Structure formats: structure tokens, C-alpha cells
Length: 521
Image 1 (tube, rainbow, N blue to C red):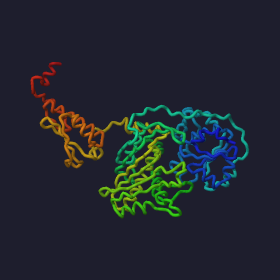
Image 2 (tube, rainbow, N blue to C red):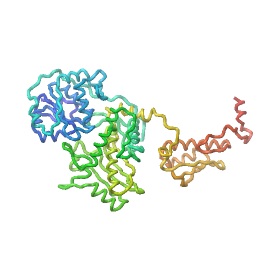
Image 3 (tube, helix red, strand yellow):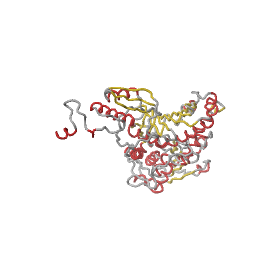
Image 4 (spheres, one colour):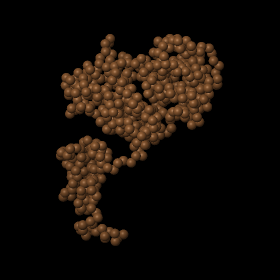
């Protein structure tokens, strides 16, 4: 029989040891505990039972097979709605491709964009695939299949191999404020790309409870302003494999819409977000939090702060290894627009961030229509915003392509570039620099004055009057131009070059004309 000493990090990767000799059984997203309860013969005829949630889990399966060469059959059970979702199939497809094509010396699997951990010897993996049969089963009833599992002892086809633990490659991390980040975007993709950039630039490298590494930012709030959930913006020239990985395709988005909008719970899962929101367990009854709390409160008072819903059920989740990631939603009305505010305790930004956002936006649209408001912003606060190490390479390439290596536009676009807090009009009079702060529509709010650019700029920064870094930089350069104009006695016009070409006026014996300066050269 297999012992825990002959497994790869069994304290981190949940498995069940059975009485069998040569069979490994792996569920795909379905919970193995449920299968063991419903089909007790499974534990008697399997040597080990586990589950495969993501592509990263393929490395763990290969490590365990290398440690236990007496296992000659591996069964993948992919029954259930989530097993067949775009996320559920990702790890399964990689495993099937390995058995179909093998792995080359660069740790690549033909037909996929997945790369095996560098510590795993591809020659050993190819020996495994030649000696272990991989079978996929999809039926809901396992009884007949389990009875056909091989039952005898099998001679090991090689000596056990223990690969070195995976060590992530060193990656530079920029210093940051550590907790509390804000990004904004007009669409889901705009905001999400900025979140990926922040994580790859500032994220702390740390372990996870699953034995892998992650880059994590704590407290990332991203705001989506205008995304239409019925017409998702997906027109980016990115590889299809990348789009499928991050869920930027119609199938993934439609799947998550159904998860959030349906109260039904698919077979083989403990919960879905729609199920927890609309059939929240209450003793022997359930609560539809959308109808009975959020919409009820909004219809009672449009200014309510009580329109909230939760997905956490402490009696059910306190011992769960997979408690809900999205834990609370709230809606607040402002000026006739209904904004949705979402808290996510743990957020796999690279693989789940985009589908989550579109699912939430669809739920927001439903509430908006039934409550009679206009669509507002979607604010997602990802308390642990992370990207797993298996996705670092793709995430860094994406951030570099979309942001780092892309030249910013030098043309001011009033729709995408305007600061929502307002604008400054700068003037010089009587050697005083005045910065008039106005609303986005041009109404006066206040004036900040000083004799130098630094004096005015420090006051503006102290009051935090500007929300956009590009706006603050622009105002800083304009204030410096205004100071130069005052010191040189020339006219200043905002957003225009200083008129040096006309020559400097001779105000005092130490001031020279342009021609005099050139002659000195």
C-alpha cells in the first residue's frame, strides 16, 4: 500500500489513501469526499484518490506517479457542470495531451501552452506515460466502472523517483505601499490589465496552502465604469491560448453569467455563488438574498445601506478547504445610478478575475433593471489579489505588451483622460501664481496661490485634489512654466510654449537678450 511518506507534500495536496494496489483515481473539480461517500467501493479498489483543480495540479500528479511506480492505471472522473467548464477542463486537457504527445526537452507539451516544472525530468515523465494507462470516465454512476478497476499487485516499472521541490525563479519586486491599491478602467479588460500589472510589479512572492508560490497584493480595489454585460469588450489582439487561460471568451463569460444568475447548484459541488445568494441556507429553509434583502431594501428606500448579501455560511464553511472566495456584495444608489461593491477574500486574478467581473456585472444589471435605476460602477475589492507562479510568465508578457512597452498617447482625450475630480486653470498676475480648481464642467471650487511652483504644487498635493497621476504631472509642469514666466517677466498661457523666441526683456543690468547670450557662447 502507498504511505504518506511516498507522496509529494501530502500535507498541502489533499489525497485519500485506499486499499487498492495499482490504481490512482482523480476527480476533476468534483469533491473526492462526495465520491467516496456515494461509492464506498472506490476506496477499496483505489490506491490513492485525489482531485485536479488546475493545470498546476498536473505537476503534483506526475510527482506522485514517479514516487509510486506500482500504479499502472490512472482514472480521471470529469462528471459535473464545473468539470466541463472552461476552467475545469484546463488541467485535464494538459494531462491528456501529455499522454497523447509526451513532453520534449524544453518541458513543453505539444498542443498546449503549459510548461512543466523545471525540476521534473521529462524523460521520467515519458516513461510514466508509456507504463501507466490514463482513462477518462464521465458517467454519474461509478459503480460499474469501479468494479472493473484492476485489483492485483503490479510489478513497478522503475525505481521510485523523488524530484526536487519546485523553486520559483527570482523575480524583482518594486517597493510599494504593501496594502491598499486602486485602479480604474472603463471596461473589465481595462481595469483587469492594470491589476495584473500591479501584481507583477509589486506583488510579494509567498507560498500558498496548496504548496505552490504566488505573487500577492493585499487590498486591491478595481473599478469598472461602463462595461456592458450583454456586449463584453473582448476585441484585443492577444493569442487565443491566452484568452482561453484568462477566460476572455464567450463560453467562459456565459458560464459565469449562469453561475451568478441561477440559484441552482450543479451536481457534484458544494455551492455556487448564485446558489448561496439566492438559496442561502436558513435551517430547513432558504433565503433569496437578492429578492428578500437587496431588492426589498431598495424598494423600501433608494438610499438604503442595508442592501447587502453574503455567501459565507459559518456552520458549513468553518471547516471547508474551499470556502467561497467572493464573500459579500452590496449595492448603493447615487444620483440615480446603482453601484455594486464586492468583497473577494481570495482572488486568482489571472484565471478567474475576468469571468468573475462579468458574472458580477450581469448580476448588477439584473438588480438595476428590477429596482428601476441606471447602471453604475462595479467596484471589486480583492483582499488577496494573487497570480500563481505557473501564470507568471504569461502575466508578465501581457503586462509588458499592454502597458510597459506601449507608448502612451500624447493627445488628451476628454472621455478617457479627464480627471473625475476636476481641473486646474493656471494664471500669473502681480508675480503670483494662481491655480483655480474647477469642477469637470467648469464651475469654480477654490483657488490655490503661491509665489513658486513648489509652493502651489505642495498645497495641491496636500489637499489631494487630483486623482490621476498624469494630471498631477501635467499640473506640475505647468506650474514650473508659470514660475519661469514670472521670473523672466514674460507672458504665460496654459498649455502653450513660453514665448522665449521674442527675446527676454532687459529688466535690470544683469539681464541679457537672447543675442547677447549666444555671443557669449
